[in-house]
Amino acid sequence: MPLIPKSHPRAKSLLIREKLVDGFDNGLVAKEGLLAQGRGEAFDYLLGEKTGKAAKKAIKAAAAQIIQAQNPVISVNGNIAALCPKQIVKLANQTKAKIEVNLFYANENRKKAIVKILKKNGAKEILGTNPKSSTKLVGIDSERRIVDKNGIFAADVVIVPLEDGDRTMALRNARKTVITFDLNPLSRTSQTANITIVDNVTRAIDLLIVECKKLSKSNPKRLEKIISDFNNKNNLSENVVQIKNNLTRRARIA
Ligand code: PTJ
Image (cartoon, protein in one colour):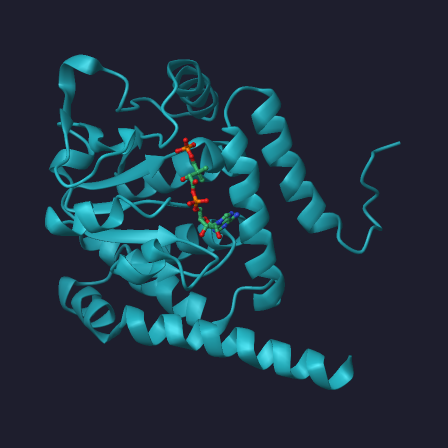
């Protein structure tokens, strides 16, 4: 008998939580990653636990940005490796993006476990593990500053799911375009990224893969138009309004 019955009203959310717990038991996730998931869950609840209109717009802009990039890189941390390793590899293969492991709570064993799970899911090359090709990103004090010369350091577009907030500005200052997934529209990362997908990464990443496929044959002009029509500040406001409307509706029926 599974511990979480499918009929449980919160089964979906509890099963995502289980992935994190398994990821922690298997050495992928930092203890703090469990807390990060909890904060995400709270915002997901407020957003209605579905991909809203604003998130869909951000996903489309992100897809256009990744397709038109010369050198896109997906930065992988413990949480994302536990939640969607298969999708990370799929997104990378589909868009010719590189994959780089980059941890806030740096730990060599955890790095090895993350590389292993990505390889198990079909990744061929994973950057961020060779000290000979590592360099430092300026303007950042955490361990996240150690990046691969051929990966994040050389990238034009960096995808940073579930970021901790201290790196996005450094990446922007290094003239990179930053795309993030963050359920909290108020976080520093959300506010400083070029494109913030305010949605649970477990829902949004599949939609991003589909959108990348759809746009892969679009001409550069159309991609540019999708990108320039997107305004991250406005999109974040739409997400805050979505939370406000959900709360207003709940206040009426409570
Ligand atoms: O594996 P490491 O060492 O690189 O550490 C990874 C974590 C996530 C622990 C580290 O980056 C961290 O401490 O992140 P924060 O500062 O807790 O920020 C994570 C953000 O992701 C928060 O704004 C959460 O709301 C958001 N978040 C959490 N779970 C999800 C999420 N966003 C989208 N989908 C989720 N499932």
